[in-house]
Length: 248
Image (cartoon, rainbow, N blue to C red):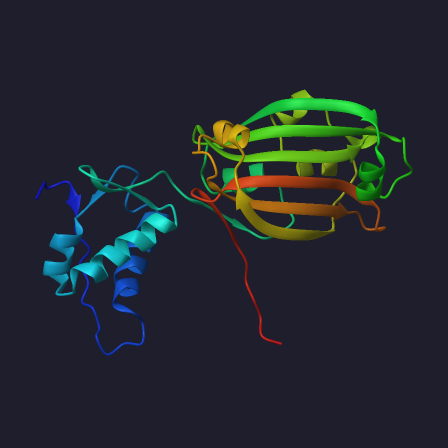
């Protein structure tokens, strides 16, 4: 076995309620997510893992497949199992994606794909809670982390408060809104999932019908006025939302 192949040093607990495959996959996932195992690191194959950890080969296979299903590793016949690029975990809070990525240590790039100013349609007016035909700006952006596409973001704003396309290539939307005196203090957000269209997959560097996470958000200021309405899609293989739950 090549010296560059990583072997997880654990002792499985057969008396535990945690399934054996999760006792293997979760420590590996933690090492990948905290950066200990860098992208490109090759993991030992399922035959070696099963023999070394004294588990069945299907158990080892299930552990590796669990990592692959989460987008943390890539499994290819003849090439083995390798760690993929870093996975973005975003806390569910009222902040911009650019800020979250930058604070997590990523090098971030934003490409403004379109910037359209026009009278609001009935649907756009309803989303922003403004009168029909008021002027709005619809912005579509591609965001990259460490050079890799992460998200396609579409935002709708009343025209008077919309930042310029140039500013949006350098700063996060919420930071620009705050700088202009519009402070988002609350939001409603719906998280979902669907498959990518051909054009979306091409823009995000994914295969056709790849799994996407979706987020639809309406942000409000302290008076309850709508500041912006956003519909974003994220690569499920590179991105997840994280939240903290409390018992009632």
